[in-house]
Figure 1 (cartoon, one colour):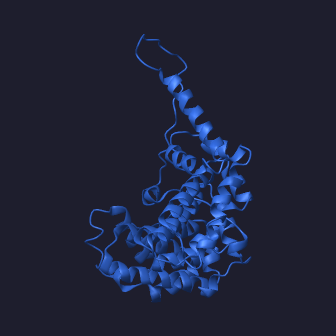
Figure 2: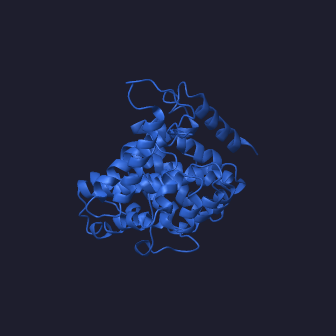
Figure 3: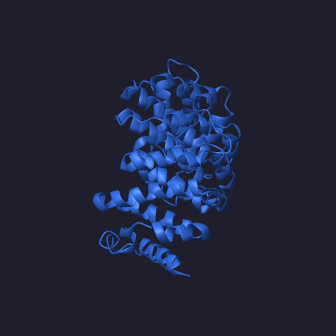
Length: 330
């Protein structure tokens, strides 16, 4: 891991970050987003005694959103407002804009995050506190995902506030939820198609070593999101060049991937295997890395160890075949 120190080392406790709630984390890493927009019909048909019209319901829901956002400013109402807004964030497309441009809201969310730092070491995080800060991270993930606030989010270096959470090692459920939710914020950033600016930002921080450690020691869900982030970094040309630039960086990534393959022989976690294969395939696009992989690609990927697990998954099977063909080319 030492070889992956970034060009500008970061002091975790001097900076800051964001994400989404635990139960949404694993399902969030597909190629599509499912954010439902509220409808506001232009034409309204009045039917006596039929109840509120869709347009009126939309206005009512917006009013509720605004009231909840205002309640974030009051410490006595903030916890309930965090919970309700985290539930509603996929129902209102412009929530990210409201959160970012409303006076005092972003500092209030960051206050929720920073207030948890003293509980990280020694580990003293309760389930209640973990749930509360995860709700705040969910709103930050909303801001990180929106195209009109994502760059502002990066410019403010808000992702750095989450690194102390990613740097924890306690395996208790409150800490696991916190790590997974924090990873989800980073995952939301790299998930976008035009993420070159995001990759450049992340490469100036310690995100790769943090993700590698979670890929080795985290739960299956955390490993899945962590390797998703590494895969997205590799898919960017700058990210691939960065990781393959020195032997130390390549060795750190390759060692963790190899350990994951050996674990997958026992766990048979197909979701993780798909990401591992894609990471190796992308590494093989670099000529220096390809030479190294010819000698160090784990044997279970060369033989038929995972053939039953990948039965029916033609996409991953093709990726694995392409990887082996790349390594056999002279």
